[in-house]
Image (tube, rainbow, N blue to C red; front, side, top):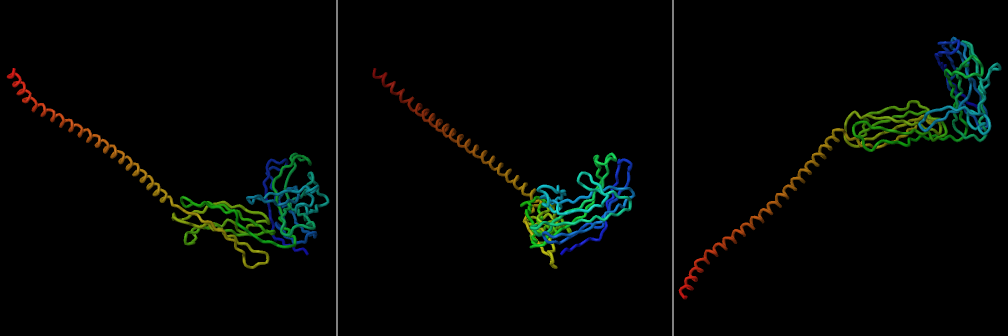
Length: 367
């Protein structure tokens, strides 16, 4: 059973080309009847679809037609890879499961076919696909590109000048067990922030096997869990199966409050067949320290250090003064003792003088 969902829209790409031979400043516009397709098939089954390519410009146009795999890097950036369709790569990626049917009169550059279209011309391009037996269940993503170009020297096979491309995205779901799981990790915020600006970084991961469309909010809450500020970082954003998207930003608090705050990431997505959205919440705590508090603490620290230095210097001076006073008292005591000794000697000499004279007189009389 094949289920096909086509978006009724016409997408146009207007490219202004300059310095091309015979077409200076010519305006060329390519349009597609649908920008997205969705199919559901069994592994080993097949499906088909059709996209109408239009030349909505007023100049003839050439357009390469090829199918590319959608690859997602760690930051969530998309790149597109065209399979070689030979050797080990044959049927190994979703793009290699597809076959595009070109008009009988189409030509090719290398192994890539291209269309030649007159102004106002519309060409239906049919495609079919067959995921091999044993293909893992879940969503697989490819893009059918239509890329405008011109030969550099009006000679086929010469170097080509590429002027722009438009693609029809195809989500191909292979039947089987469906797993839906969205996580937020890693999720990093600093432990402490001076000021009001809180940086954050997190990765939104789709760990399931089907694509999810998510809405993600990042909020900053105070200690009472009142929201101070919030930012919507993802709105109807597709996160492909087994890939992630990295988000980096800042939340600025409207108040310079001191204390613990919470950075809150809330992701909402609707699971297949559900009517109530699934919510994934992650929280991290960060302490906000206002600049005035830092200045006050710095002043107190400097003042305290200065006071301690002053006290230390003062104590040193007091100790030196005390030692000097002790030395002075010792010298004074020695001087006083010396003075007393000298007075005693003087008195002794004064007393001994008359006695010695009397003894001398008696000695003379005896003689």
